[in-house]
Length: 131
Image (cartoon, rainbow, N blue to C red; front, side):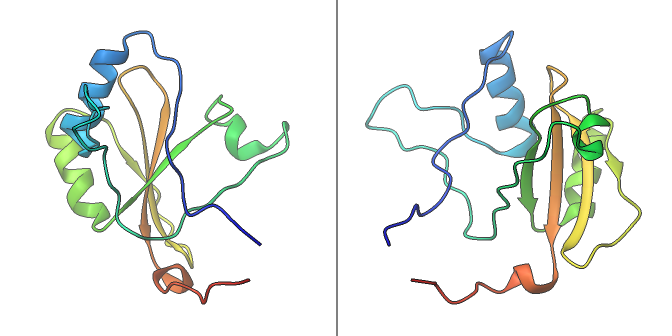
């Protein structure tokens, strides 16, 4: 069976797209969309991706009052939290360490919830490809 090879993009509406794209570039290192086809897009490191549709009544998403949370993998949660806090961003680190890693939460320039994930456990090793 042919299958996708990864997330190709995340597209969403913003009140001020230019400022929001700059915020993500400056604070999280996500390159803005190139102006020409001669420039390359942002590349992410190989790693696990969670694709999780939730029921409309799900408590987890309800506590963020949203239908979508952006989750980004990070290599060192403590270091990026320190960096963001140094830039004046409020970041809440989940005190619990889960079998799949550690998490922190913040909101972007427009109030969208963002989750940072320092991967651990079985998600550190790429499983064998399935047919």
